[in-house]
Structure formats: structure tokens, C-alpha cells
Image (cartoon, rainbow, N blue to C red; front, side, top):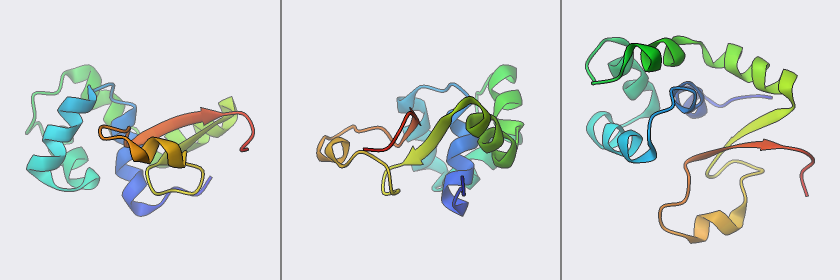
Length: 102
């Protein structure tokens, strides 16, 4: 699984367990997924130690873990992201998928 530069930050954040509304606020404040990751790791957010530890794991490690377990990580705009979901406001930024693409 090849993770794009933009998705690298998202995959790290996805494993942090933060609520979508929290992620949305952080994206508004910091702009990009990588900037949010940096803010979390530098203690500039109210993220718990558990979240910081989870976000600290590199995207390549997370990607390998997902592949080993049979999951794929896709973001809105990626090949494989369900087009139907993009029709709704509030659609998820990313999904963890398993199984075959149809």
C-alpha cells in the first residue's frame, strides 16, 4: 500500500482515536495533517498522552500493520474511497477497509 504524502499525516492521526469534530477543529487551526501531527507531538494541543503516543508511530509502520491485518486505509479523493460517501456533508475524511474492492 502506497500512502501519499498528505495521507501520511492522516494515517497517524487516524490511529490517535480523536473524535472527528476534534480533528476538524485541529485542521482549521493548523491547516494540514502534517501540521496537526506536529502540533500534537509538540504538546500544542490538549491531546492526552495516549493520543500522542499513538500519533507518534510513523505512517509506514501503521501501513504495514494494516496490510498484515488485511486492511486498507483510504482517504476522500483516493482510488477506492466510496464515491457515494462524498455526496453527504460530514462524510468521513478516511476509512479503514477490508475485503475485496468491488
